[in-house]
Length: 325
Image (cartoon, rainbow, N blue to C red; front, side):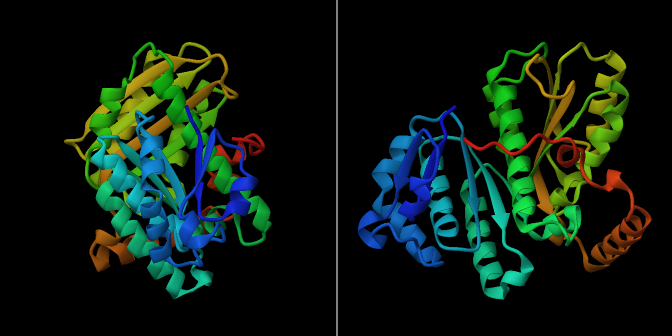
């Protein structure tokens, strides 16, 4: 696994720990950033196309995580995904979206960039910053909120790498993964952890219903991967329960692939990774459906207002955020 950092801001790159850093658009921006202009981010990526292709050619899969709503991430990420597609490299995109309080201009920029990103990436997961408030509450510290967001991203990436790089009892190989990823539409990528086998069902339900993935209608997913990692042997009943629970959440005709691996290095005794692809955003729902869903969520939120279980398991049981790559 190689970690690459790409930016138009040389100060950011100077403080990044990565296997390789690329300052794109050096002649255009002189390393001073894109000025919140996606057009500059795009031109910077185009200027450094040869360097970007060099990185892409080293990859079997490209996982592209970027902040949308500014210049570099919004402008360069779709172009990087386009280059990867031209070189037949699967792309998973993870896009963070700005707070509503940052204004309509940034929201519109982010949405336009995200729409273009989806044209080239095999699957795109969105992490709206507004959902951090819903999950963590408005009183949480700003740095703590972003740390939780980083922890979520870190957990997802580590679980994904473990799935692809370790031989499992029931193995998911690269071609299985690519086949499910190649569905058109939005994606859900989530991970839950627990220490007791009796908690697996509750952990899975909380993970699949957490607010950070509520922007996607998972019931329309046309493909799903379930990866179960455990320190000790999992029972047949728990395995069947996890599989059937996810099956009920996606389209009845969805292609579902389930893998199981025994990994002694896990921090928790059990870890469940779920990837669902080919889904429609919830915004595709009819207005009356959306209104009903919104009302139902409001009722559920009131009922669970003081319930600590309202916070997803991967936030409550997560270790401190990593200080390096």
